[in-house]
Length: 211
Image 1 (cartoon, rainbow, N blue to C red):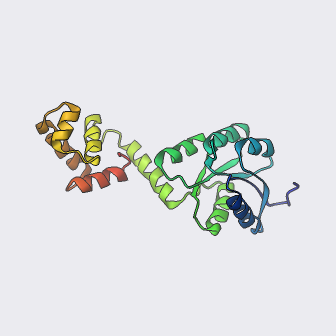
Image 2 (cartoon, helix red, strand yellow; image 1 turned 90 degrees about the vertical axis):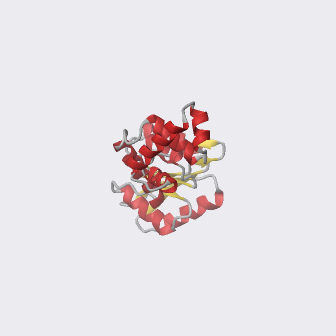
Image 3 (cartoon, rainbow, N blue to C red; image 1 turned 60 degrees about the vertical axis):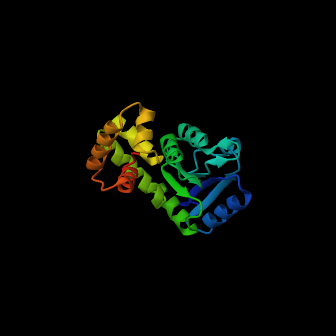
């Protein structure tokens, strides 16, 4: 397909036929964007995408195949290609695997059509647009990385036990320590997180990416 001069060339990889068509139509309605092509699987995407494409929007769940692997392959083949993850997955593992593989944008399905078009423009101009929930995850991860010694490995273990709902006695049995030691660790956890109780401690730990 010959692209109009000055338009952003966008390729859509999505295995849901209806959604792929909808995304393509939304993008095509923008005066400054032209859809270079679409694919429902990594194999077809790799065969169709070339160096003229500016932005590729990639679903992470492509049937039994991985959109994250496709992102990595495309980034290796076309280092300047801007890659946007477009998915229902909002878990920490999916987010950071996609970003490490080469995605510079992470959007969740269900965001407004306007936000998708705006995100394409932003990523093509050097931005890194993300769904607000995903941006919060990234901030939390960076905060945790900046505070590597906030809690000791043992304190993190105990915090995870608390998150599972274990009692002091159950934590002591699981970790082969005394209940007195558990109590001391929990007191330290509260102090370091500046938490007032268990619920507050868990909430503060999550906000720092410690859970």
